[in-house]
Length: 154
Image (cartoon, rainbow, N blue to C red):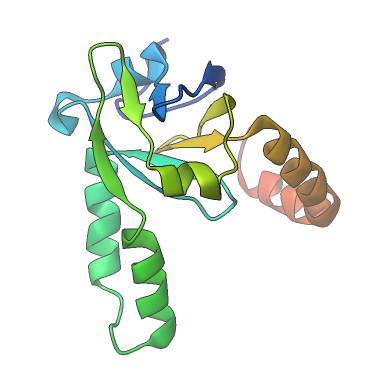
């Protein structure tokens, strides 16, 4: 089965090295379309994780951010917190990207990390924080999940 370009699914365990480099799974690198120029944009996620977007997907986010009002305090803060921590990263010959130290600290990353495919992006998690987050969310969202699953054919 062949997935659409720039589509990421699955979960992978990897090790973050002492220089902040992280290998992107070859399955994910192979799914990148050529117009991404082997480049991802790495940004702060909303759930204490790191989001990794293909360059093409990030350009769509940029366009949407440009449409927000600079007059609105909420919009300005959202744009600032999104753009402030975002940076492009081209992977090296070993398939590694470099994570900024502030993002590593924000996501509480140590040596072991999980890389999760989220269809249009990847998430990078500290495995312990992800487990705690999911346990908490499961308690809070069981009804919301049921309602959503009724709208999506699984």
